[in-house]
Length: 275
Image (cartoon, rainbow, N blue to C red; front, side, top):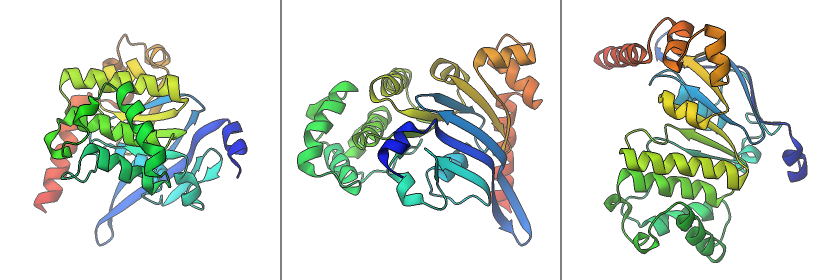
């Protein structure tokens, strides 16, 4: 598929009845995704709201071709992600809650290395790195410091800068602000808004922060135990369930609160670890 055909695609992402399970013991499986169907149109920000353990990270890994689904179809700009993963990888980038870096290397070295993985030379990437870091409010004087000396918020900014270096048409953000202090969280959220505005990217944002989902996303899906139980605009969800807040929407759609679902997921994980 040519770049022009990709640019003309109506949907940045389409999932049809996607399922994924993981083997726990003999003949015993845990289901991370169960018949998930959703779409992200060009230039849209779609949020997936759910507690830890709901399947959000598995969803991102499936879309980014890091994990192969057991069932269903995943298409990125009309390209089958299972059949043509390398082609899909040219158009996407992923930022997770725990971004991977060479911690002893500087942020500049990490960014240069990341650019090389996508075939971008140092000569091309250096001025682009300076431009991006200036845009996101990262002090360029600190690019020579080892990553391990930077705060979580600064590391997450570098993770987003690394993603932007490849000019991705679809960005997959998996809990990008989790664990950040309030100032860093606001900075990263502002950066996400600017990515959409200035870089014409479509975004799939996975979060368990309801305020973040409502503030940043055009539509919000609720994922629980691997099932997408609802998806609509924030106003549409409130109207559908006759509630005044997303907290009440979550309760009406799932029969539990986000906090209770989070606790239940942690209890299951702890029990599995004990086994």
